[in-house]
Length: 197
Image (cartoon, rainbow, N blue to C red; front, side, top):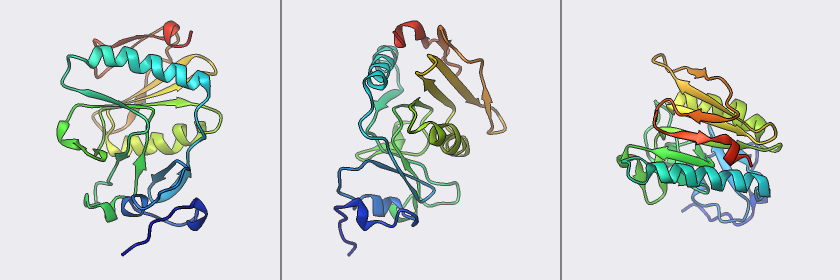
């Protein structure tokens, strides 16, 4: 039987792991697995990040309150099996914890989080994570079929949104600085002036 790992230093940070391994990690450090590779998450987010996350969650929660879709916030595990992977824990190589996500297919939800692509993923950028969110997660979410991906850049008070087209490729929308309307949820409008205030 595999052993519980209680210290991140017991792991080979260059190794390849699965969700079954991830379930055995019982230490303080927060990690994500992207295609089997460990990515350390930033320490506790700064105050501005938390304010933006809280305001976005509040606005979105109000919208989804009487909707069949559900919104979740970090820490919340989203397991993304590749198209050729079985959904068994030992075969899943990607587990992420987006700042916010919206899931409309209730069958994807279980006691451990979400298994499969949410409809909407939101990541709030910070200096420590912007390369991972802009590069690795962009590709990952596109490949996984996440229908809409928002990158919230608090350094310049801008929301960058990408929508999956019929060919499974993200198309970037005009960067938003004042108001933003979701493409997949056209009645969801975000007042960015309020979010970034």
